[in-house]
Length: 149
Image 1 (spheres, one colour):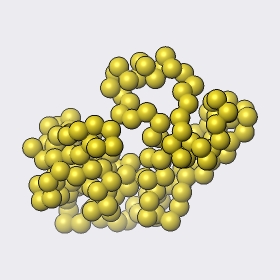
Image 2 (tube, rainbow, N blue to C red; image 1 turned 45 degrees about the vertical axis):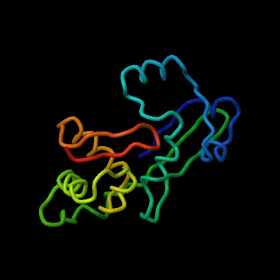
Image 3 (tube, rainbow, N blue to C red; image 1 turned 120 degrees about the vertical axis):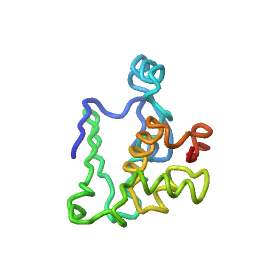
């Protein structure tokens, strides 16, 4: 998948600076609205989360940056995994709940590591499990953990 954003990196930052955690907001009004809607969990963590979601896969997202565009190319992690079956016929969500019951409160990264899931897939399942009230969120930002109910 490729995502193309017109315009370069705001405030003259470089890609390396962004990867190191520096942030710049291109549209503060949009960020404010998304924050009020509880759609944004952490400001300025997107690039790092992109790389984390590919940990252990042997591939990484590719970035192309010019003064007039910002493009990210995500390799398809599911292409070679379509024939794999979930162990013990349990869904990833069920495996997350069982893991949290066994281990207690864990971060997204810890859950992902234990179960061999991508960060993205783990986050998606955790959001659904919270909405279903099967697990609960504890803490905020980098200290966020999740626990079974």
